[in-house]
Length: 299
Image 1 (cartoon, rainbow, N blue to C red):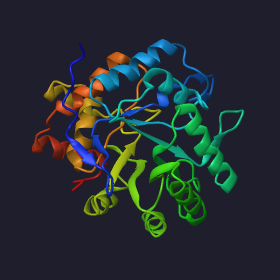
Image 2 (image 1 turned 90 degrees about the vertical axis):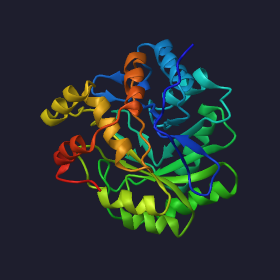
Image 3 (image 1 turned 135 degrees about the horizontal axis):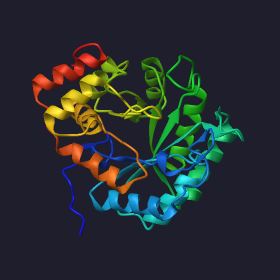
Image 4 (image 1 turned 120 degrees about the vertical axis):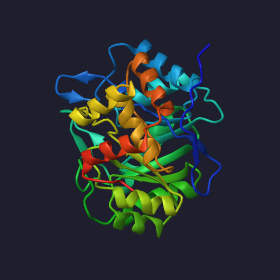
């Protein structure tokens, strides 16, 4: 019997009945690697990947983040094999607007035809009739938000929502101006941008979204492909009797009630360690030390 952990409370996506436990799971690391091609091909241990997903859900995780361009197709196919038929309360959030080159590159795929095909690829590989949440990822810059109109792809996604293929819409890798533009076209339930202890560009945006009841989902919460390695973080972790990654996740969960975290891993042991971060309370004096990593108070 797997013990369900306290997953740091829950958050209901605006205008929906979808209540999400704030500690979720990001499935990107379930895909494999082929030399320099990251998130590419099947994992070495498919059974291990299935075990991670099943343990996550058994532990109370009901928010899984994925995309059909992870692999490509691989991650969604593993999710379906591991979890279908899906629990009633499980919310799968996917994203569209990119495709993979044969060299493993991430290529913008924002035409009407590409967006429609991406939604159908996600539906087919996940084995769903409708997608809970689809994040439109801005691709003006692959690694960080950059200005540019997202009106055309948002209009396509809104049409797919009206057809019942997409229940709710989110955004990823976006600027405040792009969020405002998107909200003129359709309601937005979540924003997924890069954010962590050391990268704090969205401090003000998080507060603005919280005011409007919109979820903020930081990707690379632990640094991504280059994990956070910070002296202050390690010292705080030692003081708290926790791992540095647990402290980094706990800081995010205490940062704002609209933050939902989706740390990824391909290891059951590491998954359990991440989930335990939802039980870690970081004292106010320690929060100040952690805030200093990113340049000052985050509130």
